Structures are given as C-alpha cells and as structure tokens.
Length: 527
Ligand code: CA
Image 1: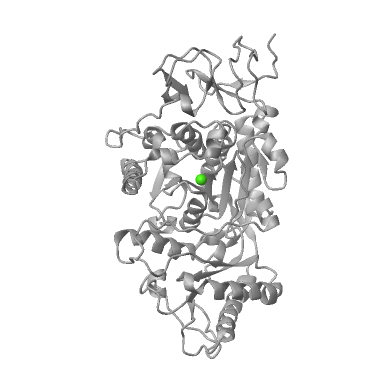
Image 2: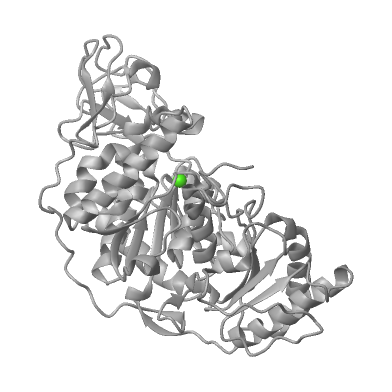
C-alpha cells in the first residue's frame, strides 16, 4: 500500500525526475502514490527517477535538461550529482533576439508604505547616517568614532535609526587606472547615495590614498571640505570630508572629535525627517538567494517571483542578479527583454562574466556549494532554473553593470537585471549601490545573512528550517507544501510583509543586529 504522506513533487509535466518532499527523506522500498517503489534511500530535496534511464539519457527538471545520466538507472533510483553530467553552457552568440514575449503585469494601485522622502525623489525605508571611507587605512579610527557616535550622539537624535561605516578593503595598493577599477569605484560612489542615507554624504579619508575623495565622489560634482574641530562644519549643501592627515589634527582624539562634530551636523538634519505615506512604486527591492536547496525553486523563489510581479505591477523597481545563477536561463531572459537593446545588454553582461571566469581559470562548475549538493541541487543548471524564478514573469526593462545605479541609467521602475556575482555579500553590496531600499533573501540550508544598510526579509524554503530558525527567518515558504498555500497567496502575503517592513517593522536580522560586511567586487589587479 502506498502512503499519501510519502510525497514526491514533479515540477513540469515533461520531467522524468521528482523531488522527495518528506523531512528526513524516504527509505528504500517506499511505495509512492503512482505505484513507483524507491530502490534506495533518498534524502529530502533529492531527485527520484520516475522512469528507467539509459546511460546518456537526458534528465529533465523544470521542463529543461539539467544533465545526462552517467549510467543506466532503474525507475525509483536516486538521481544525484555523481550520476549526472553537466550540460554545456548555452551559446551566447546564438541567442535569439526576437520580439519580447513577456507582457507587462496589469497595474495595481493604492498600495503605500511609510517612508522617508529624499531630496532627489528617492525614498528611504530606514533613516541612517552612513560614513563613507576612501580607504581601508581609516577603518579602525572610523570604527572607534562610530562606537562613540552610537553611545554619545545617537540617543539625542531619536528619529535616526543608526550610524554605519561603509568600510571596504579598497582604496590603495590597487591599479586604479585600469578599466576594471571603474567597478569598485562606482560601487563606493553609489553606495554613499543609497536612498536609506537621506542624501547626506560624509566621507572619512586618510589623505595620501590612491582613491582620493574627488575620485570617490565624482570630479567636479560636489564641493569638498576638509573639516576639523578648528574649522566647524559649514551648512552642508553637499559633502563633508574629514581627512585624517589634515595638519590641524594633533593626536588621535582630535581626529575622533572632527568625525563626531561632522557627524552631529548630519544627524541633526536626518533627525528632522519623518515617515510619510509613499506609494509602493518608491520601493527598490533586491531579490537574492543563498544557501539554496532543491526546495528553493519550488517554494520560496517562485513565491518571490509572484511578489516581484506584484511589485512591478505597483510601479516599483525589482533588481534580480547573481549572474552565474541565471547564465543557464539565458534563453528565457533574452525573450523577456523589453527591447533588443536590453537583450544585448543582458548577453553582454553574461559574456563579460564568462570571460572573467575564464581569465581566473574557473568554469561554471565553480558555482554550487557542498550544502547545495547535500540539499539536492546536482549542478548549476538545476540551481539556475530555481534561482531565476525569483525574477517572476515581467518584462526586463533594464540592465545594470556591476556597481552601476538606477540613477546612472535613468531607470525609474520595473524589473531590472543588476549583473552581480552570486556571492551573497557581494551581490547585496552591489544591489545597495544600485539603489536598493529593501532586500528579500531566500534560503533553504539557512543563513543568518543581514545588512546594516537596509532591511533584509529572509524567506525559508522549508517548514523544518523555519521551525528550527524561528527567530531568524521572517517568512516560511514551506507552507506552500505543508498547508496548501498557493504561490499567488504566498506572493501576496510577502508583498504585504514588504510594505510593513518598509514602513519600519523590524526584521529578525535587525532585531538581533546581525549584519554582514560590505564586500566590493574588484576584478582589477592589486599592486
Ligand atoms: Ca546569492
């Protein structure tokens, strides 16, 4: 007798594998509803062959070939990564650039959140003082100052959520004039202008570094002032720069005083801001996944896809990224591009990344972690098909190269491919630079990931993870499997949760003050 509690899930009608749903997996001899008997133990999230496979047969999941069988396998076998070959990457040269096939979602109206309006028209979901740094050399001094600002100044400015230092390992000892240096430099420039920082830009510089403040901020655009305790900060209509090597600084304490006097002027301006009712169209939501498992592509990522379509329908901007995880979905992305220019831009970003990997002697098998494989993801093709589901079904309106911002490209709404590595912290950093004011992060294996600059809503793919990590995960997509929640209902719930978090509701990562460091993408040589 088969037991209805023993469940396997087939995603697409043409698939010849299904995914074991039960926590703890299913033992050899388990009889499934359709009469299939498992020939061996199969862990949760892993694939079972629904029909006999001959050596070389295509294995299909999501309706696409994720690999070929290495040896013959009877029906009911465990199809794991050792038993599958990795298919060759789709050619970028032969991508069809036909007319766009995706249709704009029907607009929805009336959704709002409580946000902080900025002078440039963007909206913050948090009210944070960010202190930019030109070089790693100043990090220790800035950390010391930030601790004192939090302790001594922040309590006097109750409308300001936090003060954060934008620290990094860049700024000196680098080949700053090579073409690829543009990526880390524009990333830092755009990070300073993230909507959650209220248009206030404050920089701490060393003085002798290669990345001079004018280069960080863009030459000729912004007045630069060296500020010290001896020269009180003027009314800032632009940017304040504290230079540690300024001759007026005598001793460590005078550097700290300069930073604190400057910070105080910015804090008092930020403190005058209040949340106002803003349309949902002001949201810039970055979607990402990390620590993925085989359920990422069944529950959390498709639910995020529905949420993404709702955001686009509301006029908001959605950033999807992780170049190595969408590379195998290039055919889908190109047909969803709104214009041939966007299709070309997508292909150019993927080709640039192929060349970058090749230059480092890596290939696409470099993506997928031991945890991914334990979770049932055999290879990057299987991972990519689940990952790209986060982007929903809307047309792709624009493309950002790594470190570029929506402002740089004049993009004001819609679904955007922000090309970034898949690395969680690098992707998050680049999405912040793009202008993200809210982050949605799905995970199956579990990660405590967070950012100090922007709220991160974490979505668990499985109820088991949501239960064990009940005070780290913000939403449980496992209910799609356990409680019969439809993807549409799931996406709508997530959409509503986003509006609450954008309005100030704290995420678990914010509750515990968990945040990862910013990590720049620097493909240029160091010296
Ligand atoms: Ca990632």
